[in-house]
Length: 260
Length: 313
Image (cartoon, rainbow over the protein chains, first blue to last red):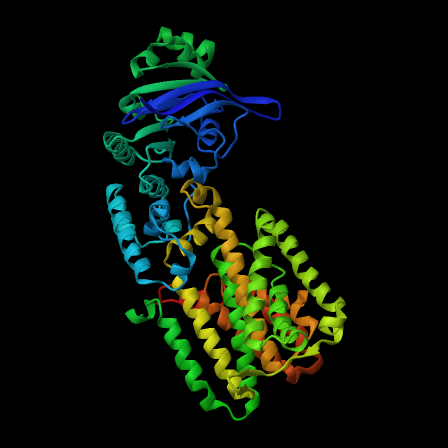
């Protein structure tokens, strides 16, 4: 059974249809990639699924339940987590604190207990910190745990976001360009990390421009063009499709590429 | 820097020592009074700093809550026969309730819009206080009955020095506690990125409201303490200028720094006393000093000192 199922999603901004009739479903442990040229609506689709935008049409199901139109924090409570293309880290908090915020839903949070710092709060804090440190270890940032997140490199911040998203122990993880701006070694690490996460049974939805990465780790791929689905299939099927090449390179470019 | 400085309660211990030793330097009761004024202002500033420095939400009407606290201990005993201590608590509950009710709609606003909305709230409270002359004495203010607890009358500058210092210590302790807890982290997270906080499952609206209510209660208690200490209240305590003064204390001392709020309050209360030698240029100089310190210490006094070479923030 699919963990995340999206059907017939559509959203318009001022009369312009940014996404129209997009649908797909992802199973537990699967890596599902969404690709397409700039402006194809990939990030917009993520924003709709994670509840930041409200879709004009369509339906989103999470674990078989209708979650269309729910707020991001409600979706998070139901097991959806995401990262951002343009970093959204908590700059003035340390790396480990960033990940600890990711465990917010797994923590008991009571204002009065916190104000008086009851022993239970300290105990829970220690548990949360240990869990966060383990995740930082997983993404290779253990040594930077107590550094301010704002002082970390771009690639490190990308991995920090993944650690924070994983801290919530999600069923579905949306990754928006996790390898953007990363060098070859870092991309390799992220590649391995995503595969490990999927192996644990998390459904991973990936938006990425690094085609080598996408073709290597994806189980299935959805190609979007100008907000519409172009083709969905395995990496081999997608690579073989002339329409995909055309979408990326234009008609002329596709002819040239075919000749070459 | 020695390790104890980094302990959560290091600044609380330093504060307690300063409070205990300061009176040894006081040549007259006037100094007790100035210090008590600093403690009261610092208490209000610490609360506001939880809202502004931690949760990143501005309030330009916070003197409104200060005024509610002040007038609660004035009106309760005089008009309604409620004992002062109960009036103080009622004032805090009223402030919390008002913050909760008004906060729900206006905390959805961001930046400048929130600033204007909170400013409106403060102006409204001040307006009610100045016009309900029968209850509040209007622009002239009204006397406040002395605080009597089990037959003991709290009066004299030195007595109030210790009472307000006790309140400040408790307020500081609670604020420091909050820092490394789920609530404190949620405040700081939504300050840095509301979107990321939401996606992490943080119920942003609820935490903004909590910070607003906490700040309102701190201000209300500070207002009650000042009114009981002075034996008099006037509408200026709820006025816009006082709101601005509170914000200045927080920003000058350092957004997000609990000790910064105390330093900010100390500077803003004591500087005018020190500047009286310049007579009519006093306010000019005060404004000038604030501008200069904001240019050269944008993070505020305490965070700036913490960053000095050889130290770690």
